[in-house]
Length: 539
Ligand code: GLN
Image 1 (cartoon, rainbow, N blue to C red):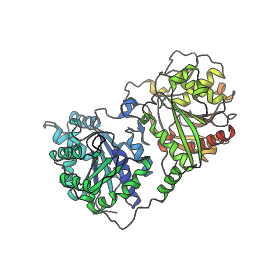
Image 2 (image 1 turned 135 degrees about the vertical axis):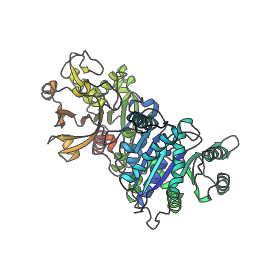
Image 3 (image 1 turned 45 degrees about the vertical axis):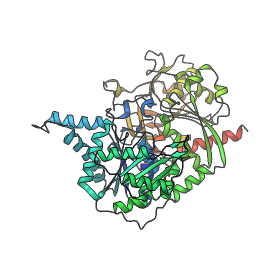
Image 4 (image 1 turned 90 degrees about the vertical axis):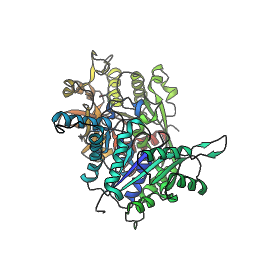
């Protein structure tokens, strides 16, 4: 549409966790709904090359793209909001930037020069930002800078975007997301932290164009004027971002505040087309006015931090809305299930999901949950490690293979029903070496999976090192567990089913990475339907 790509930078002030990812994704949604070709990227200031090696307690879920990048969970929000596929290029960390610069230095690319933060690191950052816009000819690239303004570690990113403003001038816009705290003792909203945060940005040479203000209470005109005056922005550029019940309401709240309108004005983007949010509104209406209700249990070992399983939770919201069903998600720590109280903890549950994961902690509880769902005929979905737990449970309790296990947990098991993929055995490095990204899976006819997808071949995203051990295929198949999806090229069993059970599926891939507001994932849609049937059968 436009001849030159526009760059919007979103920084955060005062505190972390204000929802920069959601505000960025909401703005992107509104611009996309106006017909612009939009993408978003995230710059993370930490030194890890990617979040693949991070424990979920650190930054929540590690999201995986089609091209196999292990990324920040915000990329999941971008894909879910925009219904687009992101890639390696949509997430960059300080570690990745430094790695590239150091590789170049070793190759001799800077020969003779002292390699420094400015200009070498900042140039690499700028190149990375611009590359995304150029690659696919986007009208707008939104770049979210992780962390909070004032942090030492994000300084090179801030300096890079300052330089980009200088380079590209009118094609660059700065949005600063900040907090207007409410002091209950004086009953007032306070603007001072925002003034300070903008002052810090000004010290770095950046004048924000728009302030998005997170608040618990509405901002009146007096307050908006005050913020505008002290922070040097137009009054219509003070945007209220009030706490919302659902992240999916935020695009509409931003529309009401005219965030997209001021962005278009400032960047001289065509404003003739009003945003078309028909599908989004349909989704939201169903979400806010459900006709039915079910209870789904999510069994994992990181349930204290809900961000660890965010894509699964969001997939259930998408599929629930499509089925006009409220999904009550019960987060259950798998260690609790180790004490034989499954029937108490899983009472009134209409569907059990055993989550992905790594390592031995609390694994026996996951295996118990599978057994309970299998015997009680409760719809069951095992994702990645969850599928592996279903295989282990079946081996131990149906095939009577005592102490059957995954070699990830018991390398000496007599029945290693899950074992390491051959190509993984030679690897020494941990980072970025799993089976990652999108792989083809062929579906057997006359299976539940075939009914769900109505397709013969699918592509789903992976993140694991271990697989079903094909040495045991016959034992499983002759006793009632089938392999409905396979990777033909490498002869890998990608999915399991128990045809005598109402709905029992295990998938080695992660369907949750591909569910979006516009395209809820068929596996989750089917799980909700099975959950509804279960709910009506136990009434
Ligand atoms: N730890 C298991 C493996 O590496 C499962 C991984 C996962 O659940 N993402 O195969």
